[in-house]
Image (spheres, rainbow, N blue to C red):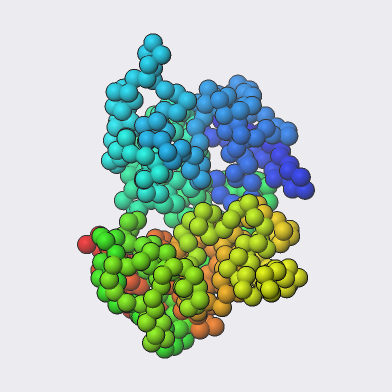
Length: 490
């Protein structure tokens, strides 16, 4: 039903796509794979009408089409769910669903019809979302559901999903997969982009791999194994997806006792040791991120104590946590970890101005030398330290955030979803960095919803449900995903 032939696209200094072909059949799921910067997003934006190709052609049902803008794409039956949300946060859900395709009669909005249609869409997805709720008040998972429902409201024949499950719980993922299977029975073709290879095993019919803007290959899913896909994506065979390290856990470092904040965090207690990777996992909304925000001083607890090296902390804000040696790599690095329009150097220097300034003046030479050192040691791929942060891939953005906290000499590092939206090659680099930090004696609290990551990286596992720690797993080598899930749904 869709054929993109010999697509080329160049940006200043970068050839994003070189002669790429894509074929999509009716009623199939085509998984589009590749590392960050491989060209996946550029190819999809050309299909969506956001970019024009420099060369190549597109045909739907064998007929050539010209897609100059998103309206042309919609008319051609194409809908895209982007990884970054495209919602108006100050508008209700129902307005976001039908923005640009409002249901009217004699110039008046048919509110009742829109609300009924919205509820029908959510019922089809198997979730309950209030049509009148403001999008800014929804959780990330709920906002993702609204994006999916909006795409389905277009009655598209070609549906592109870019990391649609990045913020969904396992139950929500299963519901989404059920919807995808239903869409397939109606002849809808789906292009599915994901860094989670276990999802590809579950939902894909064929896989297509890009690397450095070129097509590496297209295979039936039944013809390739996980290791084969990784090798196609990164251009080499990875010895271990989760790098091994010598476990050398030291003395207790951070002690949390009876920590509580409203209904989100309830009587949480645990101890974190030097040289340890302690995983905190659970379903979305279980209280993991809220716990990290308290430890970083972003939120004040209602009760409980936080002790570092035997000294009780009174964290009135992140400034106090940073001074004590606690840092947070937040789940949403683009909104909470970086100022995207500012340079890599500026982002690196912000929490370290006390080191890089003298008598109120910034010593840029010293700052530049420091960031250059981390660019080398962390292998940050960036043209210049003056490059704006939004130009970097997800993995390199994460490294910039890590660099600024390492410069701040943090002893306790809180990683909240450290590999969210990061490709498999960059994930391994992040895992290696986490291992290296632990071997240096840093205390690591790793919050993750990816159970493979938890089992592959953690020395111990804590599981949360509805604000409480419902279990601890010390024998990680013999632990299983079902064991974790039983604790997560208590």
